[in-house]
Image (cartoon, rainbow, N blue to C red; front, top):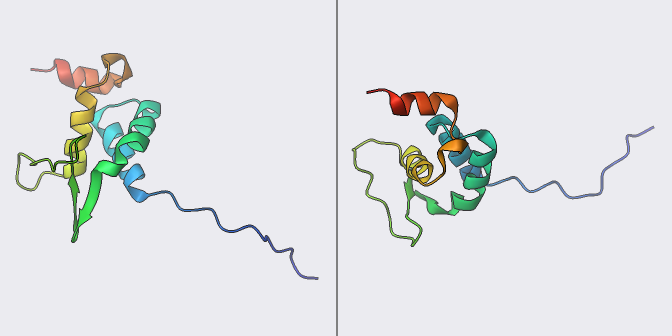
Length: 100
C-alpha cells in the first residue's frame, strides 16, 4: 500500500523580512501582536543591497542609519516603536524608558 499523496501545491513561504522586522520590534519592546501587525504593514521598507539590508522611510527614501554598523532593521523597529501608543509596549520597554 502506498501513502496517499497530497495534490495541493505547497504553501507559499512567508517573506523573511516580515519575521525579521517582527522580531526586531519585539526586541525593541513592542507587544507581540502589535509587532506582528506592524511587521506585516512595514516589511516592504526593507530591501537587500548586496549582502546587507537597507531600510527606507514611508516615502521610499533610504534612511541614513546614524551609527556605523547599526543594524538597519533594529533602527526601523525603533522608529516604528516611537509612533505607537505606550499601552502597546512591554513592561520591560517601559522600565528601560524610565531609567536615567
